[in-house]
Amino acid sequence: MIIRHGIEIVTRSFYIYIFIIYLTYCNYIMIKIISGIQSTGSLHIGNYLGSISKNINLQNKYQINLFVANLHTITVDFDPTQARQNIIELVKIYLASGFDTNKNNIFLQSEINEHAALGHVLLCHTTMGELERMTQYKDKKQKFVQSNQTIKIPTGLLTYPILMAADILLYQSDYVCVGDDQKQHLELTRDIAIRMNKRYGELFKVPEPIIAKVGSRIMDLNDPSKKMSKSSLSKKGIINLDDSREEVLSKIKSAKTDNLNKVNFDYKTQPEISNLVSIYYGVINDHFNLGLKSAKFNKTLDEEVVPIDIIKHFENKSYKDFKEELLELIWNILDNIQTNMKKITDEDVMRVLKKGKDKLLPIAQKTLLNVYQKLGMDI
Image (cartoon, rainbow, N blue to C red; front, side, top):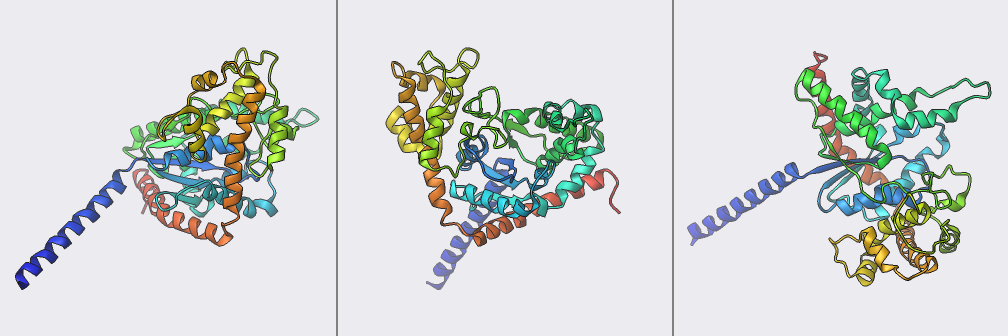
């Protein structure tokens, strides 16, 4: 009897041991995504669909390592008195949106010094020509033209892509969640990684991009030639995540369309309604709207509503009908986020950020140490 009992204990212990090894192995081989978002204040629906919603939808299939890119925030003018609160509010929005910190990580970029250290090493392996060719740099530097036509460009604006490369390569990620406007920066990141791997040996995993075909670049509601931005002169073209239902209703009603009154998805011939369809695509596939997606399109959790489905859904319907549904979908997301945010404390945010830092810091340290060793910089 004692022998049999002992065998049972040993057997159970063996299976527990095997199970622990299995979990460790799964965690090791789990495909990892790195993603970052700047803490620049109030977020809008373009930020949500371009980053937050995308990460939430991917988090059950991948491990998401998300960082608050507060070092990037200071590349242009910023308000230091609001910086800390902006970080807290951003993390609260992610948590309120359903980011699962039991399976994924969120951390503060500036709390891991290896970002800046690796950034300098990468900078020394990049040319001025590569940085000056970046489209975002060309566009943004025009904002710094002085009245006497001299240009005072912050150096951080030029080197921004290098810090972004360090953010990505530091964690040996498989994929990077980026917006369409960041694709060129990721290509530079890959070029640097390949270049340094070839010269020094295996240093970095060369990541692949995850860019949504539709909805990765949301444009202004009143000017579809410009990206939705909180710096826009007219606030009517931006739907903020803290807007009231009445504010969202007003902005959707006044959103620019054309005189065809036909829902279509063709940016060349109908850019205004195409932008709204792009927003509809993003919000109907959001996790908060699974019930509405099923009711309106008879789609399951893993089935995606695509633009052609939306066009068919609104066939023989007016822009008024379209805007009413768009309002319903957007407000359902905002209402959920605003309600959930009230339950999250500053202490919750600090706890989550510390947990993320504790998990990611050893990975960053290991990568940087390997770089230093391969470059002969260690003693």
